[in-house]
Amino acid sequence: MMRPAGYTLIASFNPIHSIILKHHRRLSLNILYGNSAKSKKSAAHIQKHQLRTKVVMVAGQYLPPLFSVAPMMDWTNNHYRTLARIISKHAWLYTEMIAAETIVYQEKNLDRFLEFSPEQHPIVLQIGGNNLDNIAKATELANAYCYDEINLNCGCPSPKVAGHGCFGVRLMLDPKFVAEAMSVIAANSDVPVSVKCRIGLDDHDSYNELCDFIYKVSSQSPTRHFIIHSRKALLNGISPADNRRIPPLKYEYYYGLLRDFPDLRFTINGGINCVDEVNAALRQGAHGVMVGRAAYHNPWYTLGHVDSAVYGAPISDLSRRQVLEQYQVYGDSVLEKYGPHRPSIREVVKQPGNGLWKRKADAAFFHCKTMKSFLKETLVAIPDCVLDAPVAKAPPGREDLFANLNDLLPPPYETREQEQEQEEEEVLLYA
Image (cartoon, rainbow, N blue to C red; front, side, top):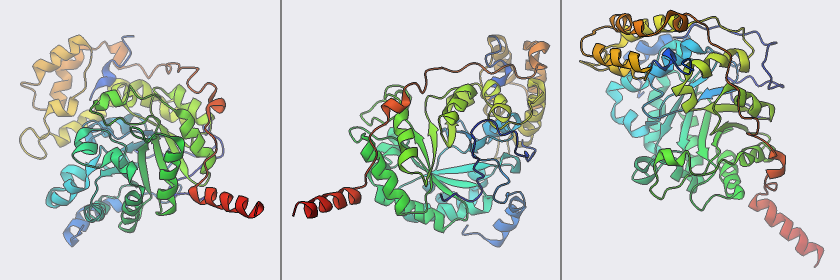
């Protein structure tokens, strides 16, 4: 089986205590309560970022992406990723989707869109687009930032993306273009490439159609890793939120892909909300699990257990107060970095908390000039016993999430070439 460079696959999907963990220091405040209340590269451009090349790990030094945080528009930005990395050292992080056109047109302002701290490794850049020239140039421009993987969005159902933009999940209707795009990305970068997609869209939702997409993209490009959101997308005007709720989850499609494409790697996404369910998916045979909103809305109880429960690292004794102290250093370093109020304290904090804390935060936004002063004024709303306690036991997952999966698996996939060969053999047999 071919493996993308940088991945170390393991035989067992139980917590991997036998692996020597490589500790790299890594540097939105929902951790306060969570559930606790209950280029064209110019020489100057290369020089500016050459420090990043020193932190890129050689193949095998990062733990494999058993757990990753999904790319989410307006959410998985630098602020959130910094917080996430403080809590988990081993989760793979994704940027929010960045349009290839944005990267190309903002060539002289790329730091605002692509810069990240070295502590965020391993990190994946997700791009979107439907123009091969722009995709090629965007990939080339992103090289200076040394992402660990580049992912193409073929799953976003937003009308702005899949509708007027004609990319995102709509690209699943054109696997030939996706294969060309992935080949262009791979040709202009020296890191692994991957595709994130749905299991289908609208009436194009059969298992065979999904397999046709996977087969064509993987056979016509260097793509060996697919992240599968286990719902189809509906492009009939429903919202992205409804597209995460209304189409039913079909985990059997994902596990069918594992059976039918043994030389590829697949990460499962959709409807998995806690570390207990992550491990259930891994025990069932998943190569990796991607979690979205649960990791954003409740980072303390989700990411706080990833390193120990998924990767087998020692249980962390990090407290909320210690996390906030580290995050405060980051926050003060980026305030107004790109001009007045860009970003502001409100943007760096962003996350909701409990009622009393929110009221104090709303008042503090008007006059606090630093993260340090903001936290000093607002954290009095949080009891010391909450701030100083390590992460509690992980919440239990749903026991029936993958029940009767083997009985639901679709029939094995046969490519059209295989079907044609079978038909020709039958003709010869009865001739």
